[in-house]
Image 1 (cartoon, rainbow, N blue to C red):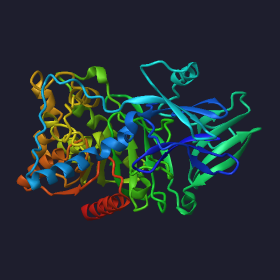
Image 2: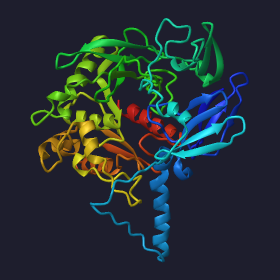
Image 3: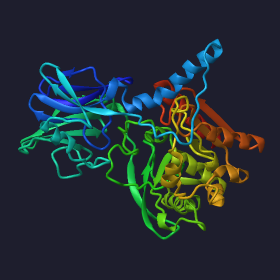
Image 4: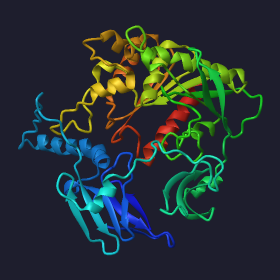
Length: 470
């Protein structure tokens, strides 16, 4: 049997899959916690499974947090409209930090479904020590690479204690599979996404380029399926500061069978060359004189130059796009360069001075203390704005909006922890200046869209935008 976590959008349950039959069985109606980089489970013996479940069987943290604000807002608005209950939610500066998810140990008899729970702080059986001390696998998970009997993009998921068998997960261009390797022969246990075998693949490859700072780097190119040698096509530069092209991370965006919303083959399929550059920068070199926003041109321009020089791309028809920190980078690049035909900024930050509460927690009595760590880790701003205002202004594309000349498509979900007000401010500024822009809001969506209808709609709008812009 293979222990698995089964999600349905509301719950995350412990279950087992029978290797021979492929049948799946949910063990207990308890919500698992998300264990970070550790595995969900540990087999104590052939019939007993150890895991962690939420205290009080609350929904798993991220399933809970993603919908918490929306559900609380609906409830509070109804209370306010009825006028019978106050909806005040006071916060104080001295209130303790909130624990969003509490866990307890759970030991399950796989045959009967009976289980026992134990407090993390109280006494527990010795047999739970192995579960508590289980090692952390590589994160992000590393692919196997060439030289194995399984596809190079496979991830080692589990090994037999005697080393005689192993379980791999693999996303190939024709399907997603769970493989069992025994006697050096892989056997398919489970497969899905088999429709991918009918999709015409695009040619994808890496090529070197030198950054403006003199660093040797790589970029990845995805060519349209119908590309012919010698053609100069329109292109989309997909940006994300700190990204390293050609890494061994699983589920890279250049893979045809990439499971997330940002499958960049959707752009290639519509005739666009996709450029995904490494965007290195010297974190130690950032400070008063130089901020992260100053580094982006040093990789964006040379990456475009390299692909243009190779003959793949028409320099006059390059668009720039990105999501999250890449959305911020897109807007920054438009303030610093006239090289791009248009920009597409998704879930991006425009004004670092107005980082406010996470909307997912806004309707609870929770003080959100995540802003300062986010400024430090994402933008390398170690001081608050009242100590270094200029660095915040220089890293905020809103305060250079008058320098944007290219049209900008802005996309944002109203439940995003990157508040939608960031995009509202940028759109309002562009509109007041008479600059071409379009702002598409998706109600009920978070940082990465979940609704199939909204994902489809967003991509249709992106393609239509690109077609109109060139």
